[in-house]
Image 1 (tube, protein in one colour):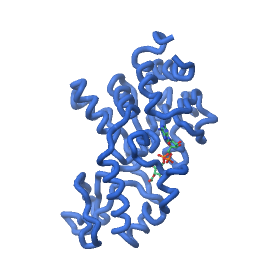
Image 2 (cartoon, protein in one colour):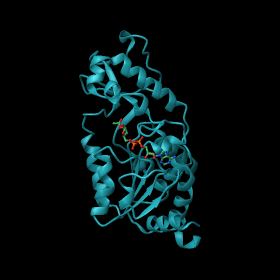
Image 3 (cartoon, helix red, strand yellow):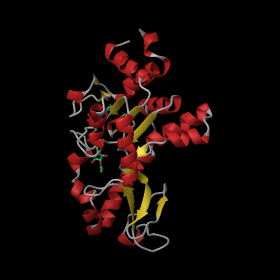
Image 4 (cartoon, helix red, strand yellow):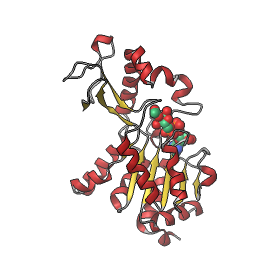
Length: 269
Ligand code: OAD
């Protein structure tokens, strides 16, 4: 086995608590576009036109059109080898907290499938669901009251009048995602930072580590005396501080890494 994978596998195997932080790169091999880089969404679209509260106030139909396009892309995507490996890791041992910036539901789908295959108890599955720092693209919430709902079926974006409305109060519904300039859900952030402080190792996968507070989590683990393993084909601000850096695609290395972490890295020497 390769030296970087063996070292990372050993760290993971020994740690009693693990934080896994993922970003858009973990879904890239499922065909879900990432945000930054030459092929990234923010190369072709301006976030201030599509992913801010002001953009939604100005042109809710345009914002919904963009989110419905993304919902269509994600709705036909399948979890890839990286999602499946991480699902095995969180279900396969105690003490792993999965935190994601992704809104695409692919971690949840991989967990659902792994749990069904292993016939894991419902409570165990509930305990392993990822902390969603940036919300979910399949959830909608009211712009006026506290109503929220899951809606998988397509949103009709043909006119402003056809956009979804809140059943209790009649105001416009919006995607339940975090936009630029908005706060993240406080309880989720609190749990993510607590997990980062407690973690002996932070496994950071497929994030450019430029958007805070998510990007601060690996530093919290390091500051508390833990180690960081980064999986990303490109260097990021985390790279220079990483205890082990694996410069490859998540789907190519996570299955072997998780295998080593679950079965005992020693036996792979
Ligand atoms: P980015 O698009 O900023 O970064 C994706 C990262 O994934 C890059 O560092 C790539 O090098 C890496 N990558 C690409 N393919 C990969 C692969 N197959 N395996 C592993 N890594 C790969 O996405 P995020 O860091 O998730 O927020 O972006 C953070 C937030 O910024 C998003 O949640 C979104 C965005 O604007 C909001 O919309 C609020």
